[in-house]
Figure 1 (cartoon, rainbow over the protein chains, first blue to last red):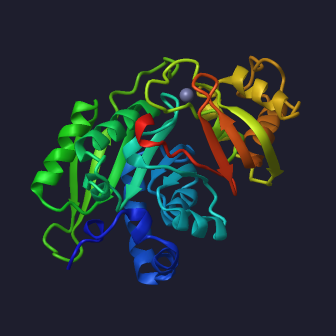
Figure 2: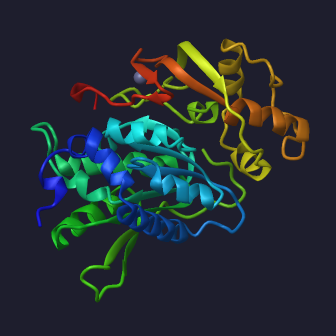
Length: 212
Length: 123
Ligand SMILES: [Zn+2]
């Protein structure tokens, strides 16, 4: 089966009809919600403390709904306008942005208590335009993400790595940008259910010091 | 976009690293949308808010609900937390522009969604 990220850029693949289909498909929606739940769990935020969470590639807001259920306030961005339109129709509770992860974040340092991202990271490894250099885009993404996170916060990415080289490339860039972490693999022995979560930690929490 | 999120935004054009916050609102339309008061969340955010920028932004939008400085007892001050909630979590910017005070880049807001995409030479 050919991977969607090899066919066209995400804003094309998830254009109008496809955005609605993707969101209206209850099987896809259930899997997305389950992965979002797992990602929120892996954020490991203290019970009963509502956080300000970033959703990278929020799409139509399926994962945002999960964040809301856990009591968090969220901000999401996506590069596909049609997906954001669906999010609006569904009255998503988070603040939405039209933004390209590869161009980096526009948030002040220490803004977020955590970040989740569902089925997005593999897209960043593509060069959809002649001007796109995947490694440069990954560096811009991870370095600005690192800065926008509170010290000690986590960023959890469920993604579909294409091969080991891609995992190494992503991990290498994330570490170079200051993150620590590793890969969590759920259902490693099931070809169909196997899921990869890249778990990154943005440094150590500084106690009693105001976040800058 | 809620005003709380505007308070966290800065310009991300290449090389625009100073005086790039807060983005200046122009020609905006606002909408109040009721939301459940979440005091724990507000307390969590107190240390992250740039309060001076928040007040200045509000004044520009003719919102005068906030005191000019954050009360020392902000954590427990019900009246203040409620005002903060009204301003930061219930006030939505539906359309307009955000202009960078440093490089003058214009971010357009439509249907409540700011467009943060940059041209290739700005990345
Ligand atoms: Zn600027």
